[in-house]
Image (cartoon, rainbow, N blue to C red; front, side, top):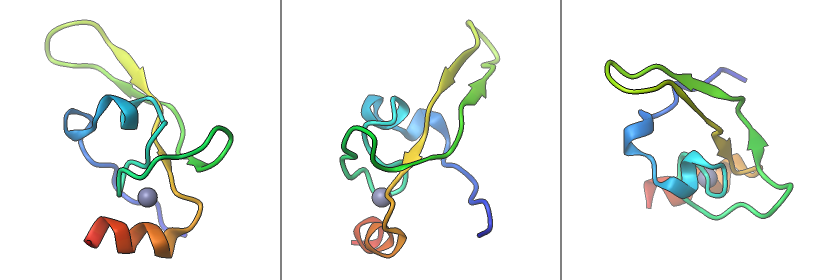
Length: 69
Ligand SMILES: [Zn+2]
C-alpha cells in the first residue's frame, strides 16, 4: 500500500495529533484501534521541536467515505 502524504500538522485537531481521531476523516478511534502511522517529528522554524502521533481508521474504505462526505 502506498504511503500517503500526511496532512500538515497545523491542520490537525488536538485529538488527531494525539492519535485519538483519524488524521484523514477525523473519526474517533477507540483505544488500541486504528493503524499507527508512526511518530512524526516536527521541527518548526521557531519554537521547540515536538512529536505527534498520527493514526488512521482500520477500515480504509469507510474512512475515505467519511473524509469525502
Ligand atoms: Zn478515517
